[in-house]
Length: 239
Image 1 (cartoon, rainbow, N blue to C red):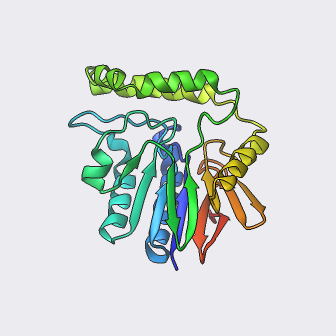
Image 2: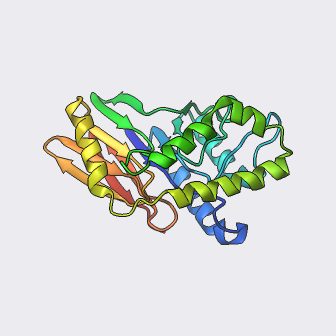
C-alpha cells in the first residue's frame, strides 16, 4: 500500500529572507521526512508567493527548496505540482530540470483502488467572479509572452505586485461550508476523497466512506495531507 503526502500554500517569498529561513528549513525537514517515509508528494499549489520563469532565469532565492525537491525525484519518489493562483508564471523548468510534472487543471488519480480529486481550489467560491476574470488574463499565453519581454529584475518585482493583488482578492474567510459542498459534489461523481487548498484553513470532513481535506498552509498551521492504507487524513507537522 502507498503512503502519499499532500502539501500547499507555503508562499515562500511573502516575508523577508531572514524571517523565512525557519519556514524554509521546516519544509526541507518535511521533504526529508517524505523521502524516508513515503512514495510520493503532491504540491497542491502556491509553494512560492510568486513564480515566473524566463528562458534562462528562475528565482535564485528558492535554490535550497528546488534542490530538496530534485533530491526526492532522484530517490525515485513521485513528485507532482498542481498550480495555484500564485503560480501563473510556470513553464517547463519544473518538468525538464526538476523532473516534476506541472498540472494546470485538477487531477483525477487512483491510488490503491481509491479515486482522488486533487485541486488547489482557487475560484471555487461563488464570490470569486473578479478573481476568475483576473486568472484568465494572467494565464493567457500572450500575457505571459509579453511579460517575458521585461528584464527579470523588473519582472520579479512586478510579479510580487500581482501576488499581493491576488492575495487581496482572496477574501476566503468562513468558506469551509462552501468547500465541503464542492467536495460532496465530487463524491457524487464517484470520487472517494477530495484534496483542496487555497483557503489556508486546514479542515478534515468525513461522510460515510468519503473524505475531504483542506491542506491548510505552511505559514501559520503547518499542516499536510497523508494518504495511507487507503485512508486520507489531515496531519500537523511538529515545528
